[in-house]
Image (cartoon, rainbow, N blue to C red; front, side, top):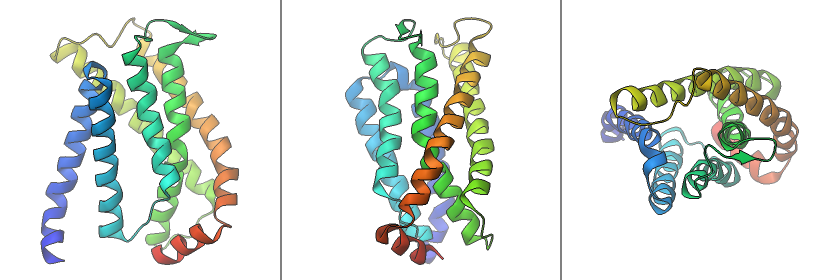
Length: 202
């Protein structure tokens, strides 16, 4: 256990660096590489949270995160970026859909973290914290796109409004995801499996 504690900070820093590097180059990688790295990264995150914090994340929430990664990966594979996708550009759809898919796990994790800190809050309050966190992460991703554009010769920013437009659709996705996630999480917490998970994390 002492060894795990000593290795924890380097491990977390490694995962954060690997995740940022993956997001930096994800749009240039093959579909197979994106799938394999996504699976490896999410598996590592799942077992780290389980081993270090004794939190069992519902597998379905992890599946939604993996699906969010595939929205971007499939868009790159089929060269959808820069094209119309229904009434919007695929880039706009991607930003919105990714946020919708990852909102449930962020709300769930925020509530578990607050519980661990001794703050018993409703799902609504946890969602408020999650919304601000997710929008901050979305802004950080736009910085990663800027780094790719400025320092690595990428082409990720297509116009002077691209970043603001991306953040607009991110916010739409976060709000839609929250509206959908809250009743689903409330319903799921009445199920025996999640009740057991809750007892294990308190």
